[in-house]
Amino acid sequence: MSVKKVLVIRFRRIGDAVLSVVICSSIRKSFPEAEIHYVLNDHIAPLFENHPDIDKIITFSDEENNHFFKYLRKVRQLMKTERYDVIIDTRATIKTLWFSAFSLRTKYRIGTSKFYNHFFHNYRVRNHVNDDLDEVVRNLLLLRPLERERKLIMTTDFRLYVTEQEMAEFKSYMEQKGINFSRFIVVCTPFTRVAGKAWDMAKMKEIFSRIIQRYDAQLIFNYSRIEKEAALALYEDMGKDEHIFIDIEADSLRKLVSMLEIADFFFGNEGGPRHIAQACHLPSLAIYPPWVELPKWLPSNDLCYQGVTPFDMFPDQVIEGRTEKEMFDLLTVEYVWERLQPMMDKVFIDCAFVSNKK
Image (cartoon, rainbow, N blue to C red):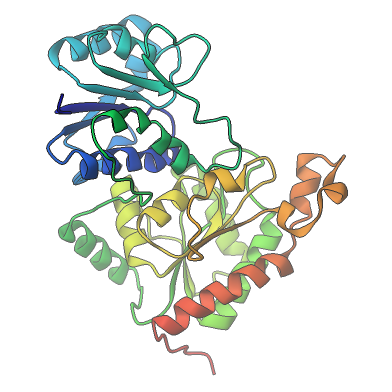
């Protein structure tokens, strides 16, 4: 049997979808003749436009996801219309099982091993039993059943793409806002959408001040609409420093990709933008709260992409018994700067920036 058409299912958030694109890329390398479809929530889908390893994006709106019969009808129609040789269900939830339920003749119905998916998935992969594996490797393990067809070519490089025109338009917009491309550009995410996930703001401000002082850097604060008021307050609190750009708004995911393709460095809290930064091959350092597993959510051993967490600073016995907030508060400015400065120094020197500081 030749693999002609593949369905990859990945609902949930930005980071999950970005890290799962390695499945599509590895299928493209292994079965270049295959047509690859990717199922996503509609608000995430624009990230994957023009992706060379995805032939068709299938989206579900919040309304469809939240209305069971609308969801079921759409899944049934899709599986009736398309004839997939492979279905890869990355999460294998009760809800996503319906894709396989409506396509029981598909030869490879692959899903993460769960106690309830014996019948619907004829290949169940135990890709979450090893805590040492990062999310990219766990995703790639779902391809193992396809080794029956041929030797697979795997890639751990997850990429996103924008057009030259999109890049040029956003670069022009940045220039109009006062960005000087001969100077260091750092995209910063001081905020998070999840309450309590952001590092202490006073500490974050100190790091921003050090970046400005050492590199004469231009800091672009990236924030969502609901974070705009907090961003403006932070800007005011930092004396409306001319190095800080508060009004460069990447108001779509594709514009965010363009901005991260253009920038020189990413620094801030862990989240979707950090994953996008790595997908743009942008050097980055992110701060991880203690309840987010850094080894799982920071794939790659490349020193260009790093993260810091309180667990880096202290042995388990020191942290034991503390609340998550108390653990997060243990992360110091000095430690973060100790990790950040060598990374920024390297990028600064490699790009041959000349500081305007005397």
